[in-house]
Image (cartoon, rainbow, N blue to C red):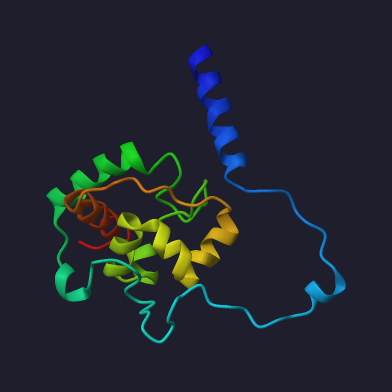
Length: 162
């Protein structure tokens, strides 16, 4: 019981400390709408369907058939690394729910995000929008290529691919 209380306190402290500093009072000139600056170094070369990372549609080569063994491995990996922040439903926990993610994002975007979250959060407009909602940056889980691919297959299974 004492261990649970300590762990809960640590998790709460981590969540609050990741939010950054307190709000600053905006002056009248700061409240006027100014053009938003892109976090992408060169927006012309950034592909929002692929994201920032090594995975491409060609390198991933997703098939329409689900790999059940990989999906099972992905479920096991996600139970250790992901489910403390993500639900398999659409409901937000700390991070967004996973239901429908493979319908909203490409496989290469998902793979690049789960293996390379910091550059994606810095550059990708969709990732930045989710960060504004969730308020907590996804930590880099140091997933191997195989584990990341297995998690993607589990997400595909969760979204009804057979």
